[in-house]
Length: 341
Image (tube, rainbow, N blue to C red; front, top):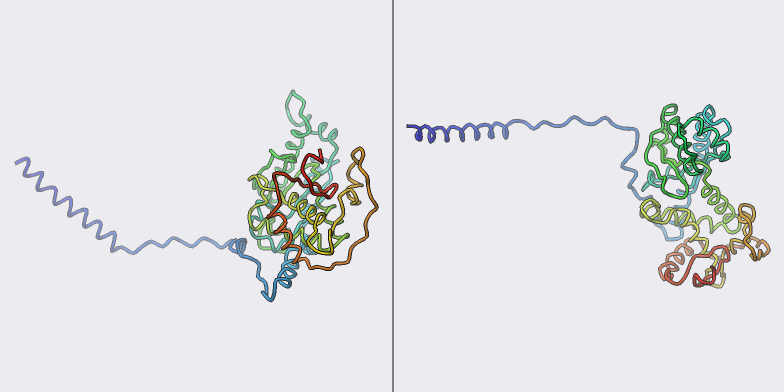
């Protein structure tokens, strides 16, 4: 009787399971509730720029109009700098802030958070920074300059998050110039998206970049335009994120300057002089021993459009011998690395 009872119960279990399965299949599907709409236009972050498509030259000119910094972007950065100053004043009375914008904030789409177009640099003397932080941070050992800068950045970021509604995105403390990436509220500008920005203490690269870009524009407007185009191209291709091992936007700018110095693809010749003839180089650096500075060149009249220079830039570095040549923008000459040592 025992085995028969077991055999009698097995079909009953199968019938119960099959009935439950049929009920589950016949029941209406539960549709998840729709998520509330956000103010950030996230899908637009992957859309390519819209161009008229008339010809290559007109498309490049149109793209330059879309990516170049404008008054709206500069006003937004000014408001951000003012907010940072007001926030850090009670913490660091001797600390000042300056902002840099590298593109039109409306046009930044791909990798806009990984490589922000806005940089804010906080400036303070190392001694005052040491006096302020050593009294705040309970530590017996003496902190070096890099550790002081990191500690100051953390304190400023915490104040911005607590007081102004900023959001922390990522830190980059392993590079030569420590920095934090924050997201500023969209209320600081006429945009639907939060505004990504890098914040650092006593960083020199943003200052050098702004000075070189401004002087390149004075020497030849095409030089500044080509730098903006190449930086945007590298950003859209995802090859300018230094934390991932790529060249930074500043290094891409140096590649453009070197190309324009050694360009020999037409009768026009080079577009930019050696860096030692730049006014910014003379003002920001001290001359190495034996360096001969030539007279400052006058701006050249443009002959070939920027669109043609962009093509030549791509062809130049496609065949560049990275093993046996180096980038030397100080002298603006091609050659093996040994002659520059």
